Length: 101
Image (cartoon, rainbow, N blue to C red):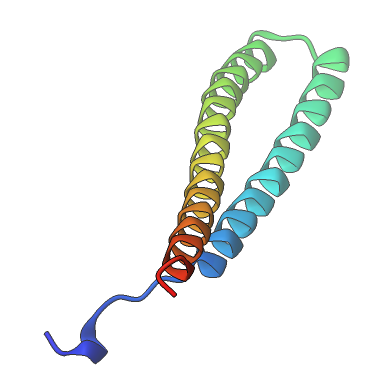
């Protein structure tokens, strides 16, 4: 490998990626909440075996999505923690390096 072929990731890029992932996740949460509201409205006026089946399947999907959304948020917190830890380590190294003067 040459130097130009190495992967380079900066902490601001990681932080920006975390923010972008979190924003997309929140937008999907908003869509799910909207769909849930619509499903509840439909269920209040349509009662049949078909409507109950659709509602049951939707609830199953929604609960799986909520778990995935929580996992995504956990990943974003991990990225944020990684950036904060790296920044703290860099500050410590810089401070200790200044002691060599």
